[in-house]
Length: 108
Image (cartoon, rainbow, N blue to C red; front, side, top):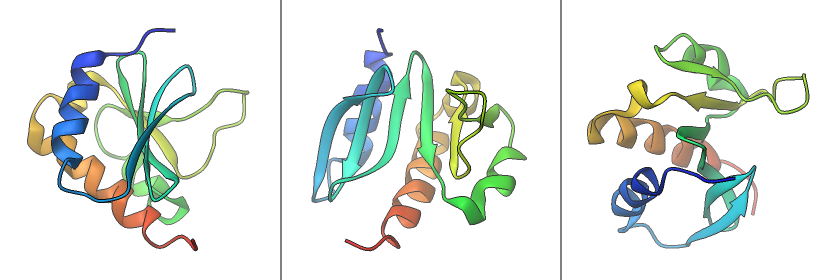
């Protein structure tokens, strides 16, 4: 399954100053990992953000978001952001920062 390569380039640009970034094909798209932990990714043309269980409901109240749901059961703490919600670099960076902040709380 293809993913939005332009969005991937925007993410690469936004995270270029971070250490410990890797890319891995996942979820039918591409995932970006921080020290081995997935924090953002792309499925088709949507951003996948790992916001964490505590931020799940507040994140879903933002425009252009929906729960991540592959199996009929949404994965709490993971959300999709439609292209309309990441049009600007500021919007994209906001989601990346939220996901990065959550992943940094996880045990290594």
